[in-house]
Image (tube, rainbow, N blue to C red):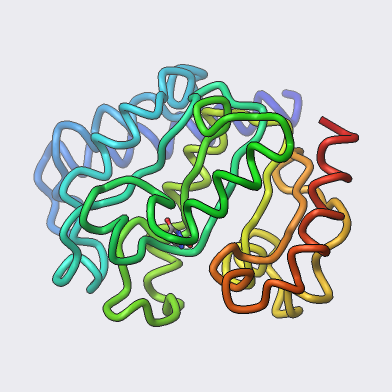
Length: 229
Ligand code: URA
């Protein structure tokens, strides 16, 4: 038996055992019909091939996976072309985004729109989303437990969109996707690989509103992006 056939046998066995335990009501294995259907699809291509942004959003539902759900008004899922070649990833919704359910619609969002236009694109041609889908109270920094709960949904969105480029905006988005603690000042200015996608980190537009002299650096990053795009 080849290694691959061996894996398939072990896999099928594990699947059948799990299904048996769940269907016969063994304690510790209580699960919904939906979970059982998912187990049944393990190892089959169809598990993720039918995934769309809509199915991810419906899976997210009225998310209560972290404490931000207690204070948010709206979940900000993401917006733009589901087949965009370029995805911008910010930190998390602010006051205006929480109120409207749309990413980057406040002051920082207006500056992001200008950045997108400067690279000869429109908001409708790109996809805009955040590390967190719910607003941290008072716009405080995202906390690790919140990122851990929310990030898998962003990864699934990126796997569906399959962009050629990701531009991470600011420290949190860049550090989360690149799994590093390096400051954004050290990360920006070059491309990295994320899930086979070219990722370029740059400063967050909200930071640019406070430090307009950094716009020059962002423009340098955007020129690099345009050249590759
Ligand atoms: N800042 C972010 O990081 N994301 C938004 O959607 C708005 C402001």
